[in-house]
Length: 143
Image (cartoon, rainbow, N blue to C red; front, side):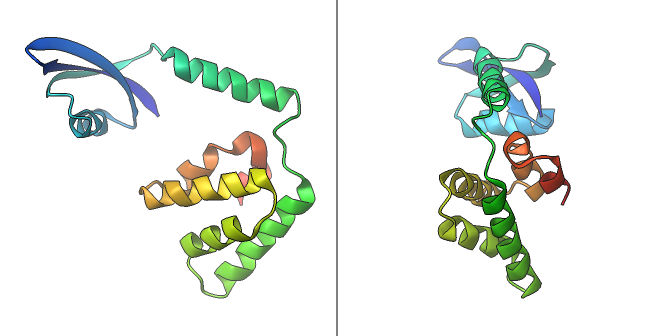
């Protein structure tokens, strides 16, 4: 995802906001849904908002300190359950929802609940699961 700076007119004044989107048209659509007013200009920016920088730093530090890895046995059990359900013909969305309900590991429950919410919002499975690359590992992401 890229960051876009959107200039818009609201209350007779020209204002700016920074949005995270895949392309210019998506950034413009997001600005319109936020009732930003009339969009004047949309441009890609290299400046990353401080909230994003801080969030990335916290995530990297938690991985470095070892606090965010999930127990391998719980991870295997959850993905085995997901595999059995999808092989039985249950949709991936319903399978993820059921795994989120049935797992007892709080971290896995949060991950699968977030995946379910992201899929409901229309994100692809790949985009949704990439957020958890550090927690799940590269092998799980590749599957």
